[in-house]
Image 1 (tube, rainbow, N blue to C red):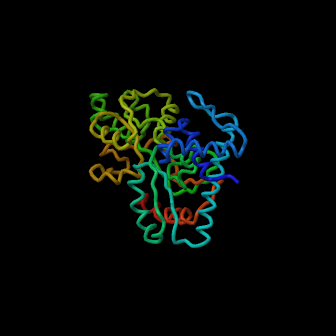
Image 2: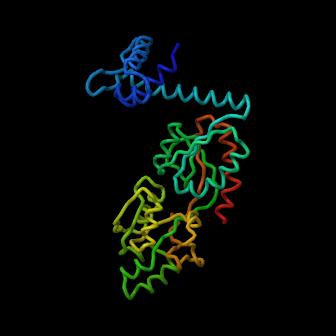
Image 3: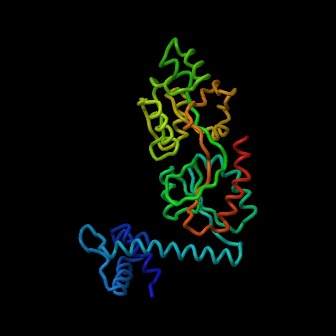
Amino acid sequence: MINFLNLEYFLAASEELNFTKAAKQLYISQQSLSTHISNLEKEFGVTLFNRSTPLTLTYAGRVLQKRARQMLQLREETYHEIADIKDFTKGQLNIGMSHTRGRRLLPEILPVYQERFPGIDLHLKEGNSTELDADLLHGDVDLIIGMLPFRVEDVETVPLCEEEILLVVPDAVLERTYGLLAQERKKQLSCHAALSLVQECPFLLVKPGNRVRTLSDEMFTEAQISPKVILETENIETVLALSLKGMGVTFYPKMLISGHEPIQPQGANFCGSGFYHLDSPTARGILGIGYHKGHYMSQATKEFIQIAKEHVGTIHAG
């Protein structure tokens, strides 16, 4: 009979490909780790590692690595399902989303959720869109929140509300770039915010992997523009702050603006603060929840989705 502990230790070693690092990660001795792996090799009658430098997996090791992930995931889902059947007094929910959206959405959702289900342990995994998609695929989170579509296979989605990416063009950037033509360019942006109107301006962008960056790149391609990018960063709040100081043009989700009281948009076109509605349909999309349709959905996940549907529309309208 397969020992799950042996599988867990083997999987850690197969991912690190270094027994010393894997043992440290597992808080066991290297000798203990070697014993667990030797037990597996004896059970299957195969060699799982090429014990050379660097350490590599044999073909049998690669096959077992894939199966070990599946078996451990199935074990985890089984425990969750049985616990749900028994009662809904204890459980765990792992949520994945960007830290920026978390700042806007979670204070409205999680207090309600915790009040209704105090026995559920909440865990938040923050990262960019690419990282969160991978976390969902590998079962590290139960659900993710972001702009659709999610770039991962076998994901069911639950739409929450409309979302829009705005163009941020401070007056100082227009004046520095276009001089006496700045006011005319600002009027044009208010009526028809096309990227071609600011293609000579410097741009500040979040790094690739972020959903806003993906949409920005798509809009640049649509407009056949190669932007002058002077800075890239992981943090969308950083690019916004630098943009508003007159350093360059950037993109920012409309939903998140209300978290910045000093820069509340004025008027339908947001021109008082340099926020403009882009003409491109790519700038408009849907914010939603994604969960892996091949994994068991716990009651904790179902209840979170329901509460999010009840409250996110209100947040967006506000």
